[in-house]
Amino acid sequence: MGAGMGMVDNQSNYMAGGAQRDAQSNANAGMMKNRIHEEEPEVRILEYGQYNLKFELTNTELSVANALRRIIIAEVSTMAIDLVQVKENTSVLNDEFIAHRIGLVPIVSESVDQFMTHKQCTCEDFCNKCCVRYRLQKKCPPDMDTCEVTSNDIVLE
Image 1 (cartoon, one colour):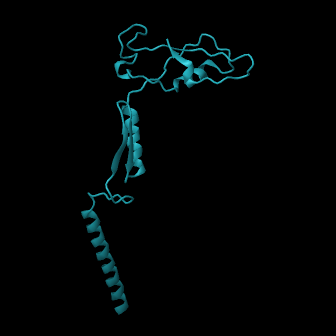
Image 2 (tube, one colour):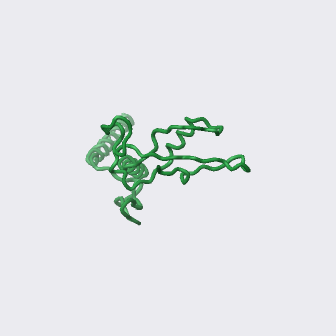
């Protein structure tokens, strides 16, 4: 019987120790600890201008940095080529492929905040408030089989 009592005592001590740990973890339940970095997150501005900001984020988890990156991407106004009309395509690439690739080209504009989307605009077709026209015209020199087309070849009309 003494051995049996010893087992019961050990179980009750174990349970009491577990209850003590549970009570302690419940007391700290509202506080989250940064297990990777003990210090507070820090943002250090390296460069800034009217249209750009370069900063360094330290003492934080990767998920926080990624969330901040996604918020910045969503909130910064940008312009992109949305509608492409092809008049003549003599390349081996189909029109849809070229239109998709042109849509990936970043457009630099200092007046991006003055534009509205075509859905927001009240015009019937396209006007200067919702549309910018560019032209891409590139011809491969006769002595070459291929040529490179870059964003420098896209010109404002």
